[in-house]
Image (cartoon, rainbow, N blue to C red; front, top):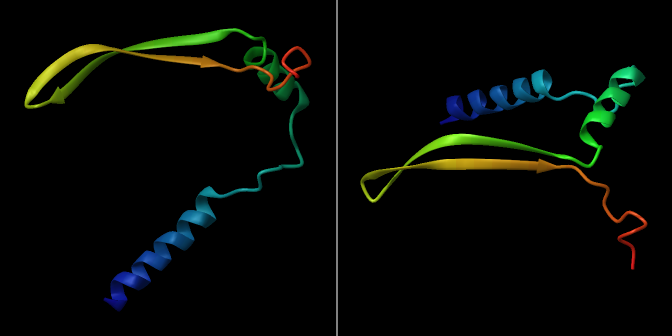
Amino acid sequence: MIYLLNKYILFTVNFFLLFCSNPHPETKNKNQQQSFNSYWYKGTAEITSYQLSQVRYGEVHKGTAVHIFVTENFLSNNDAC
């Protein structure tokens, strides 16, 4: 039991050390940020569709899954009450 607990703690510590980073890096590339913003915040949507196979009640049902991604300003001047 103690062996499993030590293994879990070791895994958790390694996970945080490997995958957690500073959320505000000081060396942001402004051109990269402007390019990102000009693409994602232009008020248009991206639509992606996928072929879907889903098993329900022992039968395979085919269909289409659609993902719609839109980025908009929240509470812009036009939306304010």
